[in-house]
Image (cartoon, rainbow, N blue to C red):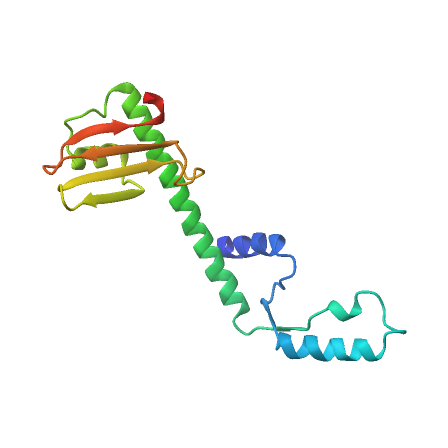
Length: 165
């Protein structure tokens, strides 16, 4: 196993302190164990210690470490996607301000200059194309996004950005 994966796994474990370094833990028949514990707690209410009935028994999962590795890989891929999304948004924003991106460019030229959009929507009735770029920290409902509209021939016809408003 590579040292990078081990470090990533250890960082995940530090966040999820309830996981064991040897593997994750899985709940063992939660409904049954909780019912049986509650039943035993109900019988012995006088000698019961505070909080002793709320514990759930966990057992080691044979696939725990594999699951942590997959979680780590998925998290790394998600982080790379967020970074790329934000980079493309910032590149487009700067290109609009500098005048590099302007109406009349083709969609291929725009994509070569600033990268792929977050959303690409085709308008089937008009043959037009709509691209949306946004910062990864912003939601899709946010006003901080840039929309590029292309006509049926693939030429940029309109740019809508928060800087223009």
